[in-house]
Amino acid sequence: MRAAIKASGMPARRVAELVGWQEAKLSDFLNGKIGCTETELALLLGVCRTPVDERDHLLALRPATHVKGWWQKHSLSAPERHRTLVQNLKSAKNLTTWHPHALPMFLQSADYMRATIAASPNVPDEEADRRLKAGQELQELLVGRGLQCTFYVHEQALHLPVGGHDVHVSQVHHLLLMGVRTNITIKIVPTAVGAHAGMNEAFTRLTFRAHEPLIFLEHEYSMLIEEDSGAVEAYQQVVRALDRASLDAEQSKAMLCCLGESLSAVDSTGRDGLPTAVFVDASL
Image 1 (cartoon, rainbow, N blue to C red):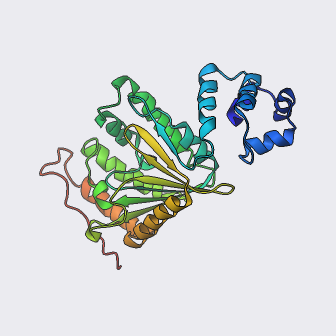
Image 2 (image 1 turned 45 degrees about the horizontal axis):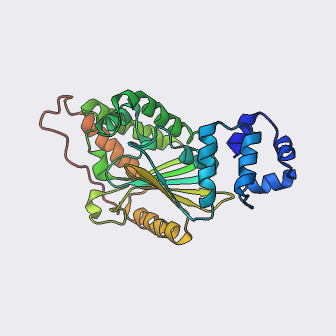
Image 3 (image 1 turned 30 degrees about the vertical axis):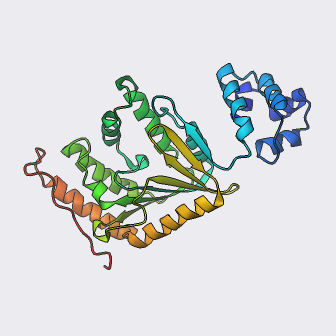
């Protein structure tokens, strides 16, 4: 609704006046403190001259606003831009991401991201460039906003030759550059740990200054947004366990440097394949 009001070009005071509300009531509605009837929502959208598709989308959401959590189903493939994730990232204070067998999209170089997009059987070739651009725009939200980010990465994910040898080398160097940023921390879960708390699924946890935390779970044909306090705490327990099992930031940088040197020393043809896994003693 904030976006709809902004798109109307009118100040919130004028919108409230046109629908017969006090400006304070509109403010409370936009901040989630009060709800509204379907008729009131339709009137608001009409005053804002919201396009038909967006109007129908927002009207369809109204009956579910009291439900904790949101299962957002896609059609034949995931959307190029996850609007809900973007909007939440813009207001988030902390981001924590874990992926059990790949690098989080936020840490992917352009070539790595392009290779992962190409590997999906459900992404049409004509969408590849648009999806790459959307992913890069999502990455830009991590910059210059004070958002503190922690990424947990499994060591095995670092050894996947996504995109081929040269892209693999470039991706490791990209991780080292990302790790230099003051708001980004990368922690590696060593292979030697064996079984660990994050084996089940990838997830992203967001915390906010004015709202309760959320968990984003992305699947092939849907995205699940968990708001229930019990579910959110369960994932926080996973984060705590991953933190105990992972190398600290400096040890993780050392592993990345060692891997980057090993990969750079290998001929671009791969010769006998990739170098063996590099292990760092977590007790050091």
